[in-house]
Image (tube, rainbow, N blue to C red; front, side, top):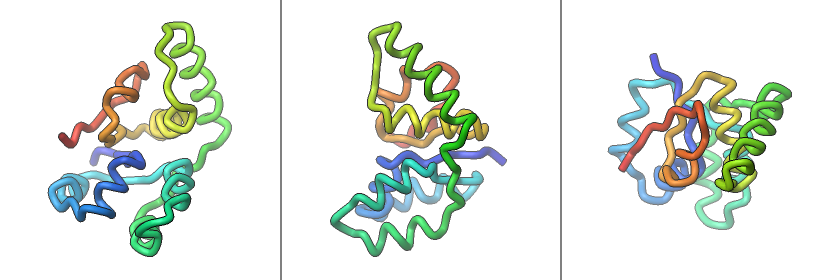
Length: 123
């Protein structure tokens, strides 16, 4: 069974729009949230109750030592290529990579810059 980490963009899409097509695609995979996605979802001011319910259905992957080391390598690589993206996105990607997950995201433009990150495209 494929392991998938859901990016915040996908989570918001599922929470706000009730995107059943996207949700169905995760039924055949083992899906997780990163601790950074948890952070970003809890920053919301709208649909917070729905977000909390959504969060409760997933195991949360920690941003730990391995993820921090991976994130620093990712940021150095992106910076050297002049392709830097937001640090929170780097943390999400690093967490997915060290946990052997593909990343489901609607932000393919930024995440596709990260070497070694497998993306799940929903659109």
